[in-house]
Each structure stands twice: as C-alpha cells, then as structure tokens.
Amino acid sequence: MKFSNKLILWYLDNKRDLPWRKTTDPYFIWLSEIILQQTKIEQGMPFYLSFIQSFPTVFDLAEASEHDVLKLWQGLGYYSRARNLHHTAKFVVDTNKGIFPSSYKELLKLKGIGDYTASAISSICFNEPQAVVDGNVYRVLSRVFGLQTPRNTSKGIKDFKELAQEVMDIENSGTYNQAIMEFGALWCKPRNPSCEACIFQNSCYAFLNKQVHLLPVKISKIKVRNRFFNYLVILSSDDKTILKQQTQQGIWKNLYEFPLVETSENSFLRKTEIQNKIPFASVQTASLFNETPIIHKLSHQHIHIRFWIVKTSEIRDYGICFSQIASFAVPIVLHNFITKFSFYKTVNFDTFEKLAK
Image (cartoon, rainbow, N blue to C red; front, side, top):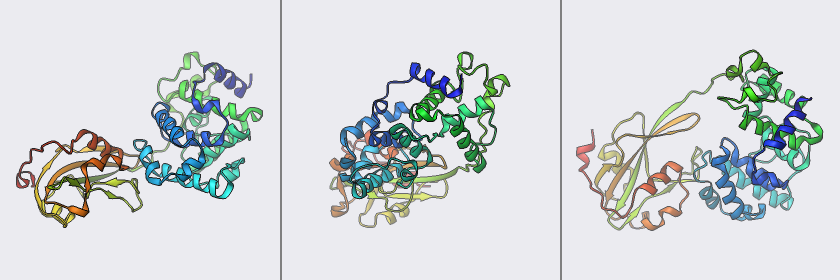
C-alpha cells in the first residue's frame, strides 16, 4: 500500500478531536496554525478557544485594538505572531472584504504566513496539493525514507519539500497533510516513538538501520546570548506604579514593562542607577524581591531577571493606580510576578545600602 494511503487510514482511526478539524473556514484554520506555531496543542488550545470567542470573525479581529490582541495572546510568547495576526486580519478586511486568498501563492503574500501555513490553509480549505513541512513532517520523512540532509540548511529545506510533495496524496491533500502532522505528533515522536507497532515498521529506513535516534539531522547553529534585566517595581506614596510601553523592535515590542535597567552581568544595582531611571520621584528605599534571578529562556537568549521593589515619593501624573495594572498587556514573566506580588500588602523594606554592593 502507498505511503500516503497508509497514513490517511491511520489518521482516520487515530486522529484527535480538535475544534479546527471540524471546519474548512480559512479564518479558523489560519488562526489555529498561527497559534500553534512553536506551541504544543495542549498549551495552544485555550488560547484558540479564547480567540474565537472574543473574535468570532476576521472582522472582529480586525476591529480590535492591538493592545487587546496582545493581552489575549499573553502567555503564548513570540509576540510578533500576534502583531502579524492583527495586521493580516486588517489587511484581509480592508483589501479583500474579509475573504482569504484561496491559493498558496496569494496566501504567501500575507504578513506572518510562510510556506508551512500557506500550504496548510490552501490544502485544508481549498484542497490545493501543497505539502506541509514542519517539525513533525521532517521527522516522519527523514526516518521512513532515510533522508539525511540536515533539515535546517537550504538544501535540506529544498529536499524535504520536494519529497513531501512527491509522496503526498494530491487528491486528498488536506487530509494527507493533517495525517502526516498527526502521525509525527502522536506516533513518530522525537523521543520514544512507537516503532514496535508502527504501520511503517517493515519499510522504515531508520528502524531497519537502527538510526531512529539519529534522524532527522539538524546542525546546531544557535548561539545563546545571556542578558541581565533588573525591573524596578515602583510603589509610590500615592499608591501608583510605573508601566512603560516597549516601542522599540524586540521580543516584547508594544507590551508594557516596569522601568528596566539592563546590566552587562549578574550584578546588584546601586542607588544612583535606580534614581537615574526614575528622575521624577525620590527613591526612599529598595529591596530585592528575588535575589536569585528568574531565568526566562527564549530560542536565542536567556534573560536573567530580578525584580526590585522601590519605594518612592509620590509620582502623580507619571504613574498608574495599582488597580489598573492587570489591564495592561505584559510579558508572561511580568504577568507571573504581578500575580504573585500584591501591590496592597505591606512590604518589609531593607535599607538600600544593605543590599547594594
């Protein structure tokens, strides 16, 4: 039996019951694909359900403010996905009356949509024979067919796409694409794949040659950068704090943060460094909330974060009331801090000099 036929039959018997599999509406398929990029289904599902409840149509998403979209996205990470999502929704509404393009080539023109997402939408919604290639597909194809070209090279990307296109079922491209992704997620997993009961056991190159753990091949290129963030959590005498919107390009663009002092190493701050960051108020006392940094790991950088609780004189128009803090879209690491820290409790401040080195 052909590879694609086996895969589709397996899928029809084993597929998970997921909400976006009950529709071919490109809005819902697009939304699910963007949310699930670099996100596991169990993590992304609540976000998908929240989005379709808050924005049931592309028109609703287009009309929303970027802040509301970022707030709903809070916790998913890679916030550029949310900004691109919002941008594309507005573009589809403004230029095409809310109708998504029906072809792979036209979908590629939309912001935030690459080869994988365009292939998924065009095949699932319009049955265009465009093969998807994601991490699951790389794994299945490399193991079953013995493709050993490194997946993260130009040649690897080309070779895998060609093979994926060659072995797909062009008559049932949408079902086939979902089948191979599901098989990689549930069966041909990165670790401890179900080889002993696999439908491809008798023909799988990796299984027959004891190379399952070696495929797919990936060249390590990522150099991780360490950064050291000191957030100043202001508690003013008039019960206000400071949140500033990050407007520069970066991982948290357009999200809100406490005043930040970034240092070149994991060192303590001095009083002058804090005072210089908030010249509109007088620093009275300061205390570390967490002496051991919280390490927030991203693909290309590890951010070592300390929170400083800073008591100041009144800040009047510079600040926001404690009761308003939860309404701002912030990075998840700040959201976790805000949830844990009560802005109304009595803080036991040490003198700053006792902490500064």
